[in-house]
Amino acid sequence: METYEVIIIGGGLSGIMAARTLMENGVKDILIVEKSKSVGGRLATRRIGEGKADHGAQFFTVRSPELQEDAARWLEAGWVKRWFGTPYPRYTSTAGMNALAKQLAQPIPVKLNTRVSSILDGRDGPLEVELENGERIPANHCIVTAPAPQALQLMAGIAPPEVSTISFAPCFVGMFTFDGSSSIPSPGHVDEGLPDGVERVVDHEKKGISSTVTVSVYMTGDWSKQHVELEEDSILAPIQKVAEGFLEKGSRVTGAQLKKWKYSEAEAVVRTPFVEMGHEGRIVLCGDAFLRENDEAGRTRFESAYLSGVSAGTRVAGKR
Image (cartoon, rainbow, N blue to C red; front, top):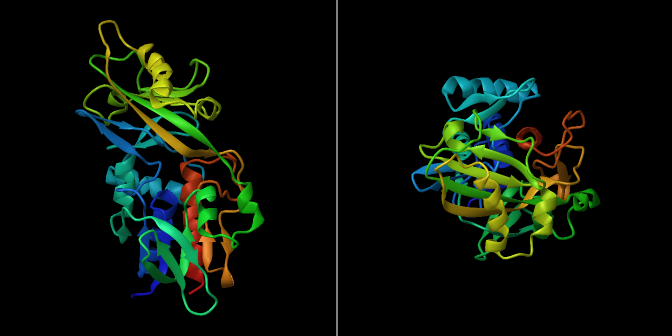
């Protein structure tokens, strides 16, 4: 079987940016292994009837020169637009956040619908990435972008102690279709004056990605943790009441769906953009919970995932 130079576990933003950085540095023999049917991770968009709804990241802000440079290119290509906000503009994808992930991943070899069960780090010869079906794929280096709790399961006895300190809060997102207008003001985003337990509410028609009125309601990590053991209907019912509070007169909710993000926002982060482990540091762990030391925001977000992936890709490319 072919030995890859680098296998990247996870096709979210960190994995995509690690791969793009490697390719820009001349490393072409790479493969992203992704458990889902699409790349993107929390850059997630769902079709609901004739409309669409982002149900992961809604936007991103820019503080670093690297992302500023890329965002300018994405703006010029028409992939993203300035949505709202000062002093830091909120940028969003013009066709839904998952579309941006797919555009960024276009030149990268990706193996979808594939789950990894473990990473085998023998001292002699290449690493082996073992899949759930028993197949083993050899590689000289491995970049792991899965959330830390999942990554630890793949690397029993390898990961350093600081990785085990990373924990995540869940997030529940309700998605609703309206047969008429919503009262959410333009540009379609509200994150103030909301009921307890609600983080943000978004109208995707006013956001500009949906041809029909679709509304996402995001619950806070604390609310989501308190309701995590309930049945789906019991979780969705109070979220729908929030959505109904934004119905214009004569409108009604015509459909409802729930998305459960188990690993949404890190409650504890690591102040380094990646961690090396295994024999000769051939395994690199990165992701949105791995922040650069000078990170001003101090929390997980689109930009922290982006920068962590770039940093990990740069490090691995420099080892060759």
